[in-house]
Amino acid sequence: MNTTTCRPLSGETPHVKIIGAGLAGSEAALQLAMRGVRVTLKEMRPGKSTLVHASGRCAELVCSNSLKSKKPESAAGMLKEELRVLGSRLYDTALACEVPAGGALAVDRDAFSHAVTASLEAHPLIELVRDEALDVMAEARGFDALVVAAGPLASDALAASLAKITGEDALAFYDAAAPIVLADSLDNSVLFTQSRYEEDAEQGDYLNAPFTKDEYEAFIRELVEAERVIPKDFETRELFSACQPIEEIARKGFDAPRFGPLKPVGLIDPRTGRRPWAVLQLRAEDRARQSYNLVGFQTNLTFPEQKRVFSLIPGLGNAEFARFGVMHRNTFIDAPRLLDDRLRLHAALLPDEAPPVYVAGQLGGTEGYCEAIRSGLHVALCVAARLAGVEAPPLPRQTAFGALLAYATDPDTRDYQPMHVNFGIMAPLDAPVRNKRQRYAAYAQRGRDALAAYRDALDACGLLAESAGRADG
Image 1 (cartoon, one colour):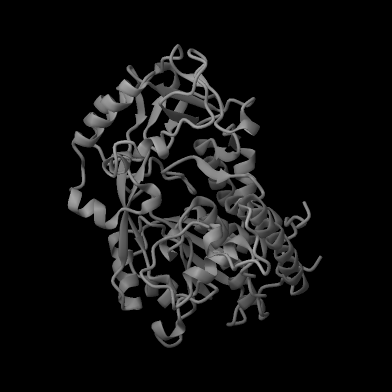
Image 2: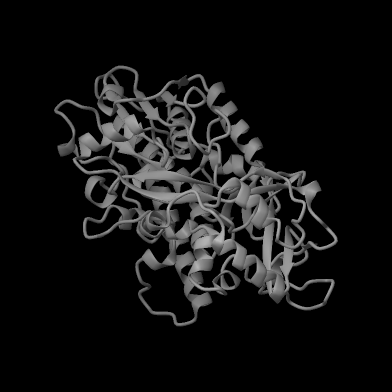
């Protein structure tokens, strides 16, 4: 197997700086260090924290502990296959920290962040610096490349510095995180264990809170009238659609939650032998199942209102909250006009003699945990190729991240909003397939074929890490 020998353009030992030790920054740092590149990884926490982070650990998950579906014939499953085949360090760590979640990959978030932090601190080529980055170009000075992976909660100073370079105002939306409750405070005489879909039914990875029609209607009435943190006129304009608070969903229609986060499809209440009117699912936060996340219950309610209203959920009457739901500001750049397909800022934006600047993770305008990890891996490959003086092979659009990258960096993309991988942005099949299941299977097979060719191309030019897997599993 070929392995790349990186060399900086200056002729000295290659040295790259990364701002932000979240998912993208941590993955990029480990990937570059594996390829012999010195990395200075700068993280402002714990000295300066955010409204949603609870620790100073690297790769801390703040919204959910789920990395989405593992099904091979889903867009999320295709993305995980890319991470496996290309040797993602954080994906391997996620598998080692997995907790039961039916067909999804969920992790013990504390174990995961501890493990990633330990890997970074232990690597001899990685220097983890705990300090705030204030100015992009000042941080880049003296390095062969700069990767900005500060995340959607980048500090005001750093965001302002980046906005000066791009000439664009930073775009922002508000993201909502769901509450977490303690397991021993739940009423197990009401809750039942069961997974929603038939293939996972025997696993019973979720707790389920079943509503009667009367219970549901009483809950929704209180939910839509409850006091919120952020004014209504701001919410409707800037909330990211994939993280809509439950109260916003309810405002769109009294039964809207029953067709979204509270859908009862595929679940049977053992007390009645029938499908409930509505169901809230709770997903384990840790292997010992000591706490549970309220699935789909991102919220903008004040903390006292969360306690009052969510206690109306059957089985949660005496629930103790390990964490209340929170809203937080997410910042991202206008990727279609600012980044190329290497996630590199256009050179015309930078001063003369400045090193290349890459933007990875959610700050670059993609959305999702695995998407952030994959963007860090992609940037690392592009930086390693430049340092080695080789041309990185283009990422095929037929792959999951290739489709997202093509969409996010296409100048014709207008009114850009952060995006998860999905089949809606993938290139159409050569031969249309009407059946949805067969169509998704065809997308997945085409993606596997393209991924195998891409992996071989990386290997041929010496960019593939020794830890990478085979595309055929």
